[in-house]
Each structure stands twice: as structure tokens, then as C-alpha cells.
Image (cartoon, rainbow, N blue to C red; front, side, top):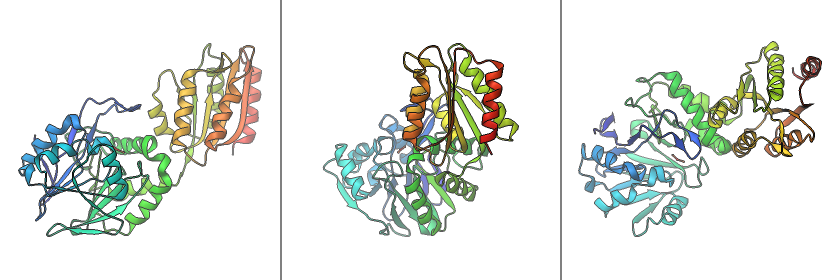
Length: 387
Ligand code: FEO
């Protein structure tokens, strides 16, 4: 297992989790990487580590360049265990090394029982000289966890961006010009939609800070390293963080006897006639983390469920719970569904919409099976309301 040179004296020494398919509920169908980076300078510096089960892979890559016992600094940009999990292994080999982290990072690492180590705590704007290079830190709390920070190396125009700009994507390619760009962008969008989205405000602050830096390479904690398409991913991040939507309506549903499904397709027709991109997505066949990838750019979110036992179908409830947690802002919503005798699905769906802060445009319910006439009326009503 070889290290991969990023620049003279700087190497990727992370691990590739080829077969990971579930990252706490996120379907990682292309696996992932945990990116650690080694800087050879007067002070040998390791930027982050990997998930503990892959520590040997990281240690082999470090050993390809240098004896791991020579590491002086471990920069911990993020406490989450997929990045800090192998810190004890490095500290076991290099017990005199110092962990550089922010105040919340120190608290978090100690709460993960990383005790008895030397810590150097940094704040935004602080610089640490490691020889020919400097490490400059910007704290980015809540760009996932309270302890996130990013680290910039001005001499190399290199940003270690932590969770931002990452993707769950396992590959032998390390750079964005070595892998199909559309797949990297799709996975970056999925990562944003499922992990970073609730923290869009802190991301906006991070973007403002990053705009002041001269960046040639973005090295995130997961996936491919950006060197050719830095501007492109940056401009996507600006859009995602500020909830810029497209002319897109997403119609998500589950159904028992196809009545709610008929309503879904009737709603889709209205949007399509108005020139919207309008995918119809059944919760029986699609993973909610993939649906989020679509939702991030959708102006309208339409959700349908029949009533089941005074409630909605569990698939729809699970999806709405997930959506509410991720909290995309500035969205319009439509609820729809069929019922047999107790029409309970619409109040349940709209309650989720209200808790998510969506603007409810309309709701549609039908007893048992929608007639052609009902569907036509529903379409006419929607036609009036959608610009
Ligand atoms: Fe892969 Fe928030 O960490």
C-alpha cells in the first residue's frame, strides 16, 4: 500500500473503504475513503487519521514514506471517529507527538477517551510553523460537529477542508482529473445533501473565509482531491449552501393499492407541462439518501401517502423524519394521499412540512380510488397555483 504524492513532500496516506454501503443510514453505494495526509517538513505532520479498523492501511502508507514514530504533529480537524479513530495508534508509535486541535476538538477528543496526550489548542487565525511551511487554522464549528476546523498551507495553496467538499467515493484515483467528473459531483452533492445540509449557515461562513485564500488544491476528509475543478465545486457549494433551487419538483410517495400512485403521476404531469424537471420517486424502490440528492435543488417537494391505521405508511414517515432533520430551507410543498375511512395522512404529512418550515401550496386527498374527474380537477387546481 503506497502513499500518493499530492505535492512535493505532501502525501495522501488514508484508507479506502471499498465495500462500505451504510454510513449511519446513508447508502454509500460507491464506498468511501478516509483521507489522512502526511507533510514532510522539519516537523513531520499528519493531517487527520482514519477509521480505526483501517489503521493498518494508513500505517503502511505512512511507512512507505517515513517511520510513523517520527511524527511530531497530528492535526485533528474533526473528532468524528472516521477521522480520529486511529489517533491512539499513532500516539502509541509516536508518544511524544502533539495533537493540534481547536478548543471543542480537545474537549471532544478527551470525551472519546483520548487522554494523556499532549494537546496544542488553536483558534481561528492562528499559525503554526512546521519548517518551510505554515499551517493556518480556521475554526468552522458545526460544519458537521462543533469541533470542525480547516487547515490552510499558504506556501502550497492547499486547503485541508475536512468534511466540506468531500464525497463518499472509493477509488484508486485520488484527483478530480482522474475520475469521471459527473460522478464526483453527484457524490459531492449527495454528501452535502445528507451530511452538510443542516449546517448551511456555518458553511456560508466557511465559504467567506475560504474566499480570502488563494487555493489551488482542496483536500477533503473523504473522497477525491480537487485540483482541476476547484472553482466548479466551490460554486456548487455556494449554491447548495444558499438553497438555490432549480425549476424542479420532486414527487415522492408510497402506495397500497395504487390510488396515491395515480395522484403522484397526475401531479407530475402538471409540473412537466410547466417545464419542470419532475421525477416521480417511489419509496418502495429508492433509498432516502438518494432522494435527498435530488431534493437539494428542488423548488417543490410533493409527498404522498395513503392513510394506514390512522397514520401514514412507515416508509413515508421515515423519509419525512429524515427530511425534517436535514431541513432544506426555502421549499414549497404539496401533500397528497388516499384513504378508506379515516383521512389521517394529510394532517400527518402537513405536520412534518410545518415542522420543516416549508410553504404548503396545497393538499389533496381522495376516498379509496381517484376518478378521472377527480384527477383532472386536481390538475386544474394545481395548474392555477404553480407559476
Ligand atoms: Fe467523516 Fe463528520 O465526518
